[in-house]
Image (cartoon, rainbow, N blue to C red):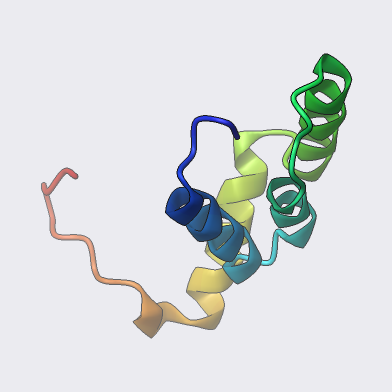
Length: 80
């Protein structure tokens, strides 16, 4: 978290909340005190909230199904 700017941190919190991953957003809402213990605690909290990439993909799919018009269509053969 120390490498994120304030605006990036706010965007991460908003993004996790938007996709219903509030436990993950709460990790980013906590200010680390710079200690190794705090870093380890926050890491454990994050990995408990988001144990793997499938957790993120699942949250995205739920939002996509519920609000398909909120996402732009993917053009065939286009890569970001």
